Image (cartoon, rainbow, N blue to C red; front, top):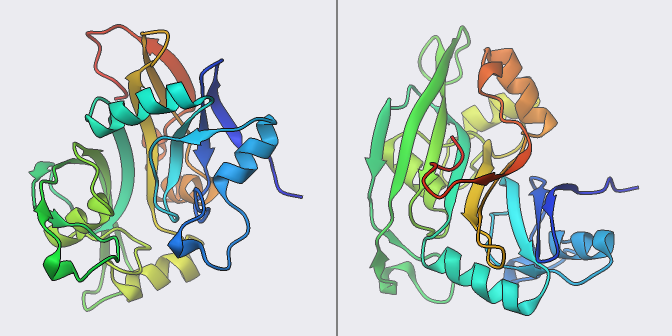
Length: 255
């Protein structure tokens, strides 16, 4: 029997949920052969219709917000489109990442509708900060030891696969990224560290409530695989906790 989804916040207008890694949000051209989706599971669990207002890639876990009526969906969708939301991610990457950096490589859309060369390059901005790192006495690549970093990631724009593409281009691919990462490191984490997934989690989201007007900050825990890895690497102090709280207008969201 499938376990119920973890609800992080619910009121009369919206619901925030922890999306598991590997679960598609809704039907799309990429969903051929799939029969279970986050949208369907949440609808069945709540016993009412829900409306998606933003997206997370299939392998990414973390906070997702759904509206409970079309009017709220329109307002929330506009807030995401106008960059009035703040998002916080945690990522495990190969190498010792920079202490703090602003990545602003323009990205072409990857929607599969036409060749990439014909797609315009769009502004894409991601703030990254190294929270911790570890060096393992294991040869995974050509070096006798292997180094990895825990990065805090704050995307300022919302291009498709933006975080994965930006970190890979900067030279710090996310572990478990089959497209933009490196296979030997991905296999090491899957086979030796029981982490066969993309190590990217959306752990925080804040936005102005579309009806009540206050700023809502929602955060969630990591799943079991990432939690165990953080504990193993000595990163337990960076484990996020699940919460939903009101913020004063002047407060910075989700730190």
